Amino acid sequence: METVRVALEARSYPVHIGAGAIDTEAFYRPHLRAGRVAVVTNPVVAPLYLERVKAALARAGAAPAIEILVEDGEQAKNWTALERVFDGLLAARMGRDGILVALGGGVVGDLAGFAAAVYQRGIPFIQVPTTLLAQVDSSVGGKTAVNHARGKNMIGAFHQPAAVIADVGTLATLPERELRAGIAEVIKHGFALDAALVAWLEENMARLLARDAAALVHVVRRSCELKAQVVAADEREAGTRTLLNFGHTFGHAIEAGAGYGVWLHGEAVAAGMVMAAELSAQAGLLPAADTERLRRLLRQAGLPVAGPALAPERYLDLMAGDKKAAGGRARYIVLREIGRAALRDDLDERWVRAAIAASVDGTSAAAVQ
Image (cartoon, rainbow, N blue to C red; front, side, top):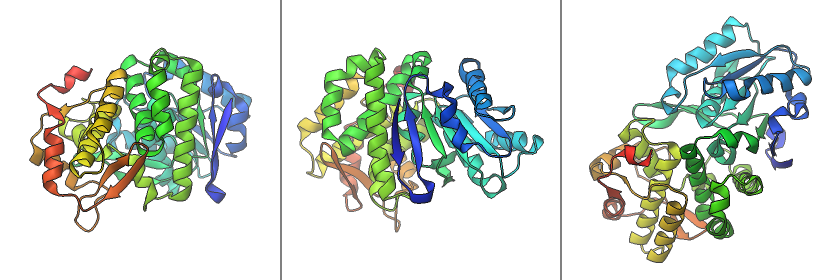
C-alpha cells in the first residue's frame, strides 16, 4: 500500500493506494463517528464491492451500513438522484454525527460528495473510487457537483473527503472503455503539469491497457501527487488549480452538446485536449509537433482525437457558461510546452474557431463506444 497526503491543514487527508485497499479496515477506522454510516453506490458496483466495504466497515467498528443505490452513468448526476440520497439518509434518521461512503466512479463520488456537503449543512464522507478516472482525478480535491442542462458540474460545492481509498484491484472489473477514459485524465496530468509522466506513458501504455498492477499504482500515485500539490496551493480554484482543467472547457461542451452519457467524460476530455492544443498552436504558443505528440498518445490509448461535428457557434455557446469564465470573458487552459499549462483570457475568437474546425469530424459519438 502507498499513501499520498493532501495537505490542507485541518482538512488534510490521506489517499491510500493499492490492491486490496477497500478491505483494509484500518483505512476506515480513524474516520468513523458515533452515528450511522451510509454507503452510496450504484447497481453495477454494488454486486461487486458493496459487501466487501460493509464487511471492512463492520471490522472497523461501524454499525450496519445504510445502503443507497443511484442510477449508473453520467445521466445520474442530477437532482432526482440527489433527492434519492437525501431520502435514504432522512429515512434512516442519519444525524450530523454520521458519515457517508461514496463507492463507485466519478458520478457516485461527485453526487455523494455534494449530498454530504449540504445534508444537515455538512457531514463527512469517504471516497472509495472504483474507476481509474475517479482514482486519478475526481476523488481527490473536494470538488462535488451535479449537472444542469446548461452545463456540467454547474451546481456543487467544495467539500474535501475525510479519506480516499483507491483499490487498483477494482480496475480488473472495469469495462475497457471506462479504463481508456480514465487514462485520458492521466494524459491530461502529464501534458498540463509533468512532461516526465508523458514520456513514461509513451513507453508504458501497453502495460496500462493490460492492467499491469505496478503500472496502475504508478499512474494513480503520480496523478494523486500532482493533484495534491495543486489542491494544497489553490483549494478553491482561484488560480493554479484551473490548470487541472486542461481539455475540460472543450470537453464539457462536447458532453453537454452530445447529451450527457453519450460520450464518457474521459473521451470528451481527450478530444477537448486536442482542441486546446490546437488553440495553443493557433496562438503561437505550442509547436505543431507537440500537438501531434498528444494525438499519437491518445490514439495509443484508444481515445478519440476529434470531437463531434457541432457547429462552432454551438461550441462557443456551450463554453460561454464555463466556470472559468470571468468578467464576461472566456478563459482557456493552453500549453506553453508539454508539462506547462497556462490560463489565458486574451485569445482571439478566430483562433478558437480554427482550433475547433481542426479538431472535429463527422463521426458520430457512438463511434467511440
